Length: 330
Image 1: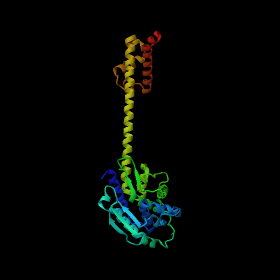
Image 2: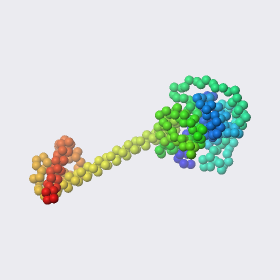
Image 3: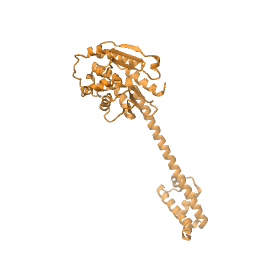
Image 4: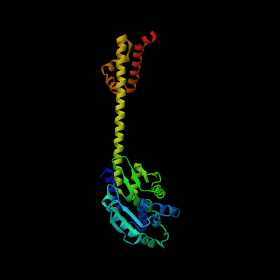
């Protein structure tokens, strides 16, 4: 099992272990579980679903021809699916294990099914019910819908790697429903739909963390946020270290250039090139070729800015001697 699979499994286990939600949230979460397997039937009913709250979504458009068909990637998700069907429809569905060939390496492990006639009979007469007020901490029905999608079709990158969330098996018909739910829950983020590969992808670390928190995966959120903070701190430390190294390299090149031009000027015209305070600075530079400007300032007991100006004048005076004759000869 890869690192990504380990974190994804932990997220699924945590979400599947949450308390069984209210009837409306259970229906929304079950609908989310069925979304990745929906296709043509859902496309025919998109107009009818427009404007419905997640807790009012009918399940028949999300079913296959033979009925409700839920592919569960783990035993925890299968148990969650069973509980949601019983809470939403009041009947116990059939649970079967898939063949070993279908389960490897990443195929469904269990299948939860219910005949279409049973689903239709339970759906008949079920009108739209008034939704409870939206909770202050978000929209629980939309969170339940996305929780169902993540349980069945979500995969996450390891917290130690760049953020990556993928919701697989999302058809063109299902994509608007999932994207609208993501946009409602995370209004500042826009996930992308890849119709060729039937998937929705997000690479925003902040969005993935916020989604985990909204769905109820608190432990996974804390793990992801902690690792994300560590990566940011390491990146900042590396940036500062690289900046310090670059500054030291520039200072070393500048000092070497000053030493070289002073030595050449003195060899050509003697120390009379530098008068007064400049001679003292030139001598200090030659005696301390690797010292920084700050270190030389302490040695000469002058302000750093003053020494910086004097070093510049020393270099200008030395270059005038070194380069002057060659310029006149040319």
